[in-house]
Length: 131
Picture 1 (tube, helix red, strand yellow):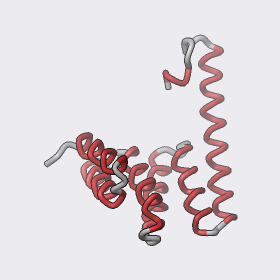
Picture 2: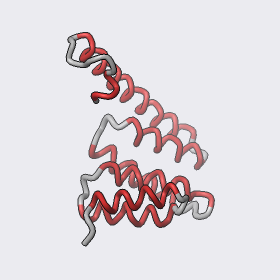
Picture 3: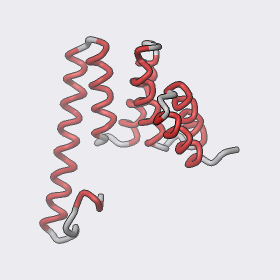
Picture 4: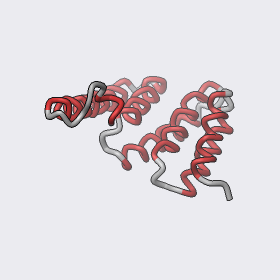
């Protein structure tokens, strides 16, 4: 059985090669091994979204995966942004705005945390590299 990190890297390679279906399958295998592997949920969401032109049904997979990422990290800007993009594509402006608002708030929280750490001297010169 392949290790979750190896499968994840395989998924990234497939994504880079624009083999979105293959990437989704690799990322799904990762979540079967480790359901808390948030980057794999992001991978499923992004690859499913990218494959939307060839298979619009994958948008539901993107929603499911991004929602799983939000469950794992309620302040996940990337997951909220993906959800917003999916709903924009689906033509659901109100839901897209809802998720976009959540992304903004999560981003503000992250920035506030960075600012507080920088002000207290916890972070060095480049606080973004230390989060």
